[in-house]
Amino acid sequence: METSHIGMITVPRKKHIITLNPNAAFTSGDVLSSSIHLLDCATLNKSMGMKVVGIRVWEKSPEGTQIKASLRFHFYNIAATLPAENAPFTIDNDEYLNHLGIHDVATGDYVEYTDGSDADPDHALLQKNIDPNLSPTFYAGGITNTLWTGVEIRETKTFATAVITVEFDTLMV
Image (cartoon, rainbow, N blue to C red):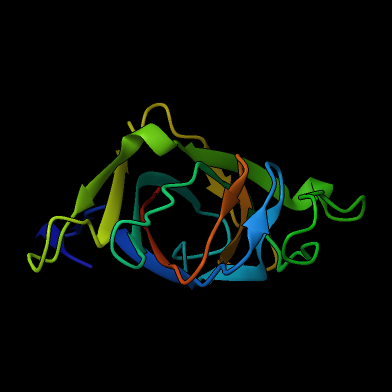
């Protein structure tokens, strides 16, 4: 953590990275990964909140086969139990009070990149910057200062050998 002058502490930003390996056909509304992903120490203490101010989605697929799927990230203040991969995304009745909110990314926001060996793209990148004034504040709650995210696909897509890396840029408030 940095200080701008004696006694004043700047509000910290943090990056959280998760990796997904979907290799199946998915229908809109399906769970992309049955794992709940930890955003470790998202806040400094239990009473602080976090805003997602940026999302970067890197997709690495065989040349020319980028999926560029629309995704929805669900945020929780507990390690919620998600449905199985490829099942419809639902929120358990016992956990809906711990569901804090969502952030969406869209197919049209991706940009493709090639590795230079040929004209076919090898990577697709989506970068979404979110105005902190518009981003909801997610509070970790009284149990922990950690937040979790689950991933839902928002359109019908088939992944063959994709690796998706998601980086969340967060701001503590």
